[in-house]
Image (cartoon, rainbow, N blue to C red; front, side, top):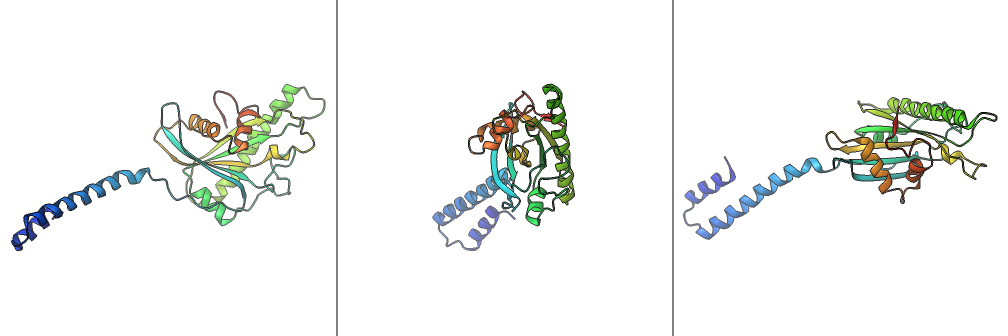
Length: 239
């Protein structure tokens, strides 16, 4: 029985109720029904719960509703790992602290399992082997960056307890700078989560928009777009 039908039944049982009572009560019932319908319609647009920043992460940034060129939107979460998670120079298998497989905390696993998609970013620092032509060395470092993205993906998949698509983004070789004494920041581990997305969103376009929008707040995003050989093209390089 609907709310209005119940009100009519009540009015018939209690004829002493005034017409004003009936009108005001019916109006309240209609408003409540409309509110419930509106809430049901809007609920799917509310973003899911975002787990708190885990201890492995030094910089945690959520970029909401970044559009692709067709206006479809996605929400991303950038995770820049702490200093312990930096690649050993010339390696795609171990980190600077000697670990070949980091053990993620439960908090980190919760963050990964909360994502709709996971993007593992592979990058290589500016060092090149002595005596190797620049273009040859650069191509070799871009391949190393691809292997690093794959290695991060291996670690991530082991931490997942449910099916989550994992992508590998290769930003390539860091362009040479004057900071040649310490380039470990160029080898930081970065993961980007897709928290929400509209159907058929072009993740490549939406991610670039998100990174450009927040590059001032997160310098790592500006670096990924401008300082690596494969980050600044018309399209990203996906492995």
